[in-house]
Image 1 (cartoon, helix red, strand yellow):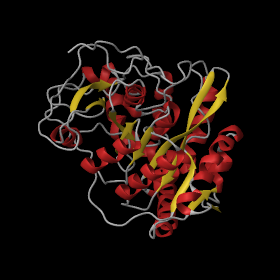
Image 2 (cartoon, rainbow, N blue to C red):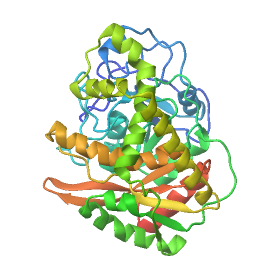
Image 3 (cartoon, helix red, strand yellow):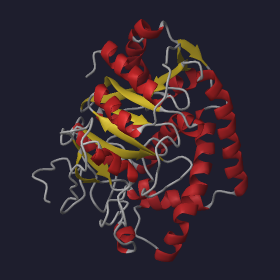
Image 4 (tube, helix red, strand yellow):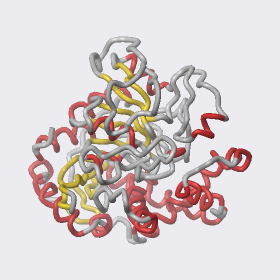
Length: 400
């Protein structure tokens, strides 16, 4: 099926894979889009790269996470663009084209779930499925002014999904409304009991990692959330520093990324963008000692954070240290921002915790007002409670 309009370039070029609902349920009447990392039966999953598509056949079945949405009454409208093999956070793709950011068109949409974020931000679909390894739902949600969730690691299965770093990969989704974010979660997430009652814990290292202008526009939102939890408690949770967290995360991700795709890259010699090729080259050079140190840091973070949040406390901090970078930003500037960004997103990522980002504010930039997100992080497995909390927080902040 051809799209009537895709002015922001969110979808894959060409005819779209459209799937009708297979059942009825809480998502009746809604349409959604799917990042081109998730399998759809009889369709080639391209992973954002023509050589991957050329060397792989059509999917044998539809990913269970997509099938669950269809069974709940939703209709799939098409597949969206991704950074090649999901290895990037700006949203660039030289093969299929980089989607526009509907909120600030001169800036990147964020990646790697760039197309899904752009489709929701443009109003094409009410929600869209993405994946998050190092921030690939959270960052485009922040850049495009959306709600987004990275669930607890392992809460939703990854069968039928093209991997990057399996111990860090997880499905996630975008919406323009907090209530719909929760509604989709009721379909995809396992049931649970309990609530998140606070206190709010403002992680000092992540706030300090943010650009001053970003921290300044988000502090009023933090203050307004005191109506739900009381004043936020400032707490140091990463004495090792954000740069150290980035290094450890990069080692874990890199080792797994090369295990996932190294043999194919070596045999196929695919045409990758310079940025993605450089990331895989770095991944190939990760030493066993570096990867082991990264996994040890992950265990430290899990031991530090999971008990802290077990009774209902919630971490709060800027989702991204900066608004979306300009599309003309130099590779060096993009890499600097990537390190600061992934160093912060690695906190929940390595700890395996659920994180929701709220479109809490905008920051003035030369080309207008750019969205920035505020993240709430809950205890392990408390995803549904976190979504309920996000809906309450959205109401307190006057968000949709």
